[in-house]
Each structure stands twice: as C-alpha cells, then as structure tokens.
Image (cartoon, rainbow, N blue to C red):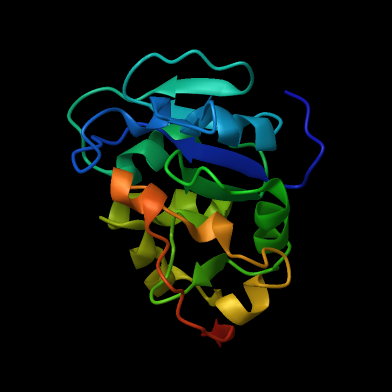
Length: 194
C-alpha cells in the first residue's frame, strides 16, 4: 500500500440499510454510488463490508457472521490499519471530502470528533492504540470517549472554515435525507483532557 497522508481511512459499508430500503452504498447520487464518491476522495481506504463489492482501490475486508453494528466492522478493519491514526466513516456520508478528514485528523488527540447536535463517531479520527486497547470493551464508537485521555469535539463553527456548507456532515439514512437538508446547530469546539 502506498500512502500520501498520515492516517488510514476506514469506510464501513456493511450496514443493513433498513430505513433506506436498498443497499445505500450502491445508491447513486449525481451518477456515482455513495461508496464510489468516497473512494474517489481517499487513496487506499479500508472498506469493510458484509458482501463482496467491486472497488477500484483500497482493501476490501469482508465481515462475516451476524450483523452487530459498526463496532464489529471496525474490529475487522483494524487488522489492516498501519498508521497511528485512523479516520472512520460510513458509506452514507457521500459528500465527505478528503480535506474534511485531513482537518479532523490534524488534531493531535486520542479522538477528534465533529459535534453538531451530538458527537459524530463515523466522521472521527481515532488513535489506533486507543481502538486496539478498547474495541472489545464497547458497544458503540461514542463509548470510546470514556476510555480516552484527550478528546477534541470539533464544533460546527470551526468546521465551517473547511466546509462552508457543512456538506460533509450530511448522513443519508433515507431518500428524504437527500431532499431535506436540516439546519445544523451551531456548536463550539471543546477539548477534554483527563
């Protein structure tokens, strides 16, 4: 694998898409699937999926067994992480940009996590060591905050500098999400050190 940035990228593409009705990763937005839109942004992403997918670049990791949510996918993908930090996202953030991930991962904390009305664990950058040490202790990624000595919550006011319309925060869980754009709550950044 060749890298030209300082963190790995993991794209979770194995959800059940219950609210969406079909596999979200294969749904086209502006003539490109949501997954391919993300693949264009990153050089060698680790794509974790419950089914075989055609990807033009990166590593495809197949998640076996019953669906248990994002934590299980992260656990499978961690085996392929080589950098000290990993940006984790889902295929249902089709407007996410590389510059957004670069910015989030530029923060030198155990967790750098965008925060609008709540923490966004699938748009966050994590210390690989923190993940490896605690992945078996959690049921949801946001629980990692409790195990971290430094967490930087990146507020929307700060994120506006790199994403003026906050498109990277758009999460598509239903067709309506493509039409209706909610007003984002303004939040300020906050650092927690324990």
